[in-house]
Length: 339
Image (tube, rainbow, N blue to C red; front, side, top):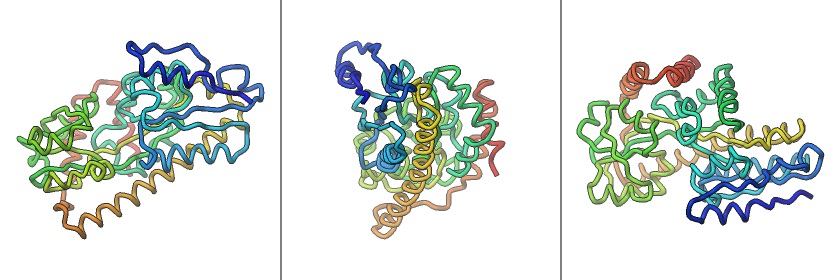
């Protein structure tokens, strides 16, 4: 039985000042891999156990892989137990963490073109995301990402479309004029703000409620599951269903992938494929349930009559004029796969 020795060391390192990645072996990175020994892969995420990315994603990957009985088991480390996004990405690249679930915009730190998966109105919906990832262009993007970073992408899902909340209805691009909207601080999200015509203000996720309550910002944007978790109906009057960006997550894996035999690789890939389907459905179900609850309770006004065509036309035009060559090529290849 192969046993990890790196996890306790990694947890300790995350808490230490001046984090330095230790040179310990990855899940499949020693002689126990392709030689046929049992392998335990660690799967890290920033999400809590009850969020779809874990409950319908990581947990499903673990269940499917272990059910395949190919000598691979998975240990899940949720809630950023193995470090924040940047630390975990570096650890996957170095082989200190085997698998991780990361947002496309965060992965742009090590390969900028992949962040375009989080561009505003790049995708028409989760079905479009799936079609692109299965296309030649999507497969090439994942291969280019692996070639540049040594990190494998096993697939992507949408954790829900992002929507605006505010104290005024947002139905068309001009309604954003003069509003200070909280956006995450990553480069792609800030590009999205420009493309949509919003005035972005960076506020930590944990401080969004207070910033809205105190009027530091006039609105924000997040998927419905996050909006519900933050109870933003208590401090905002309108939820405008702009669906301006898919919250795209990728399942990534270190060079431990290369140490799995073909049967083991097939089992891991099948587990990820099942999780992609399950997360997509879980998110859709949770969003529908929460929207109905809000409508029935009258917690705030839900704006359904958003001119998404006008928003998309503006965003696509802005990206075509402002993205650099590599990012633009990815963006155009995404739009080319739209129905």
